[in-house]
Every structure is written in C-alpha cells, then in structure tokens.
Amino acid sequence: MSKEIISESLLADIMSVSKRTVKIWKKNGKVTPLENGYYSLSDLNEFPPIKAMLASQWEEEQKITPIKQYQSIELFAGAGGLAIGLEKAGFHAVALNELDKNACATLRKNRPNWHVLEGDISTIDFTGYHNIDFLSGGFPCQAFSYAGNKLGFEDTRGTLFFEFARAIKELKPKVFLGENVRGLSSHDNGKTLQAIKSVIQELGYTLIEPKVLKAIFYRVPQKRERLFLVCIRNDLVKYNNFKWPEPFNTILTVKDALKKGVLYNTDCPKSQGQMYPERKKKILSMVPPGGCWVNLPDDIQREYMQKSYFMGGGKTGMARRLSYDSPSLTLTCAPAQKQTERCHPEETRPLTIREYARIQTFPDEWEFMGSISSQYKQIGNAVPVNLAYSMGKKLIALLNNIDQGIENSKK
Image 1 (cartoon, rainbow, N blue to C red):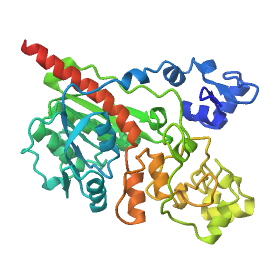
Image 2 (tube, rainbow, N blue to C red; image 1 turned 60 degrees about the horizontal axis):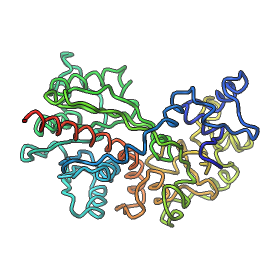
Image 3 (spheres, rainbow, N blue to C red; image 1 turned 180 degrees about the vertical axis):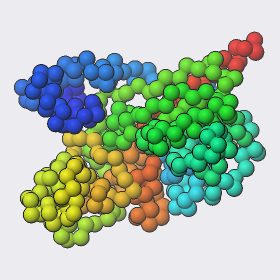
Image 4 (cartoon, rainbow, N blue to C red; image 1 turned 90 degrees about the vertical axis):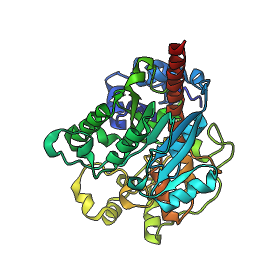
C-alpha cells in the first residue's frame, strides 16, 4: 500500500488524538475515509501536521553540510543516541561525559576514537577545552529549591542542570542544545522551566522558544516525544537562522523497524532478550496485535490487572502487544514491566535488545555492553538516532550561518 494512504490508527498518531476521536471526526464528517476504510493524506491537507508532511523540504535538508569542522562536547551522553545522530549530521565530538560505566563501555566499544570522560560531571573541569562550537546534553530534570526566588545560576546548585550550566559558563560555546522529557515544560507548574530560562539568560544566551518534537515525524518508528532547547550566545544572535527540522513525508511503523525496508536493508538480527514466565506468556498470547488488557476475557482481565481492574482509566500499556502497522509506543527501560508492556507483534515475548535498538534507530553494528537489563536501560533512555540527526542538520545550518556572519564582519 502507498505510504500516502494511512490507517485510522496512523491518522490518530499523526494528529496526537485517540482512535475514538478519529471515529467521532468520521461520524461528524470532519474526515472522510476511502472505500477501504483507509485515508488519503492529500485529502487531509487542512490539518497542520499533515500539511507540513506533504510540503516538507526534507530532501533539501539532507544537503546541509558543515562548512568547517565543528567541535562539540556532549554531557550525559548515555549509550550514544544523540551523539551518533549529531556525528552523522557533521559534528566532531571532542569529549563525551557519562556516569554509567556500562554506557561508557558502549561508547568506547563503538567509537574507540571518542574521548569518553567517565564519572560524575561535578568532578570535571571544562576550562581546559578551547574553541568549542557546540555543547549538548540531556540533563536529568530534578526539582530546584527556589531559595530567594531569584531563580538564578546559584539557585540550581545541587542539581545536574547546575553542572550543565557550569559547563556552558566554562566553555562558552556558540550554541548549545538541551534535551529533556516533554514533562519538563509543565514540571512544578512551569517553575522548573522558568528557572532554566532565567539561568540561560544569566549565562548570556538567547533561548529559541523550546519545542516538543514527536519522533514519528523524523523517520523514527516510535511515539516518543522530547523537549528541545536551542540557545545561541548573545553576541551571535544576529546571525540566527535556526528553523526546527522538517518532517519526513511518511510515518514509519514497527514493521519498518523489524523488517527489511526503508530503514534497514535486512530483517532484524537475532539477539538476546528477556522472556515471560509461563502464565504471563499464556495470558499475553490472547492479546491481538495493537491490543492490550481490554482485549482479554473478563476473568483473565481481573486475574492480570488485580487491583488496577477496579481503578478505571486507560492503562493501555498493560499487557500491550505492538502492531506491525503502527509506530511503537515509547520504549521504557524494561520491555517486560507490567505497566509498560512492549510485546512483540507476532511472537509472545518481549522485544529483544536488537529490536529495541532498531525502534530507537540505532545502527545494527552499534553494540551495547553490560547485562541485558543494563542494555535495555541504555537503549530505553536514548534519544532516537534519527531524531538527533534531524536536529543536528538544522544546528549545522545555524553554525554555518554564524561562522559566515563572523567571517563577513571581519571584511
């Protein structure tokens, strides 16, 4: 089937609404399906996300290349999802910091040439690095104490954001990128983000209005959402040409991740993975692709859900089986946790390590070190590689413009 023709569930994913909402739209004539029950994207052009997909300048974006070697440092690097995407876009990583020893082993195994600074960020002195163009990092979001309510640099002390800010202060990069969970924008009634904005201003940087990017629009077969903060040093803001990345023209699904096709040129290689206990396996074998606990017989629902059965609400992550025809739900740090089940679309088992990695768009040759649970955690915590790559392209375009502006001002 043409990628221009989408299912009802894909339409719901694109529009960030429930399938029930799409059914209501269909009933009141807001959307009209084709005879086969599917939808044509071109018939839905009045919806902004679909209009953006159809008018996308994705191909043009691929042509962006760095006009010089941009030196970057990455903090909280994890297993390298953000770093691989930025490298692919054209950044040259001078150093990467990470606390987790297994994640550091993963980085070293795959990129022996990368300078991995293993350990607590608070012990690292950044003053020895010079001419750093770009700094990036997915700093963990912790609550701040609002002592004195100044919400300045000192008020964030004791948090990992303080260390991120200290690195910016010491390195003075032209541009930096902060990456976080979408919930940061509303964390502590918006106070946390307000404190971060205040510190960015104090450091002498201008923040582009933060944006939540949905990974499904950037060649990632997963419904992950991440908040990005792009900041430009005040003396260089006059050269700002930053635009958020263009969406890809189709939405990729679990099938695109696990089977040979547009993302990978082979089916997913075999690898280790967790297994279900026998009873759980028997229960999950009754769940259809795309289904969850609500598809089970009532007596089995009661057995599986226990107290949760009486609590009402969605909980659609429980006993959830993925579908080849839809993007994956956001991957968590463990594929077999009861609240966040990620069962294989056909076989009754959790996703394997390599399947997990593919849904996060890691290359097949990228090896993960440590125990199986550590590998799942490293992958589950990563920024999807293709999302990082799309951001990287636009950041390269920004740095190109800044550098050209600096050169022209010297003439």
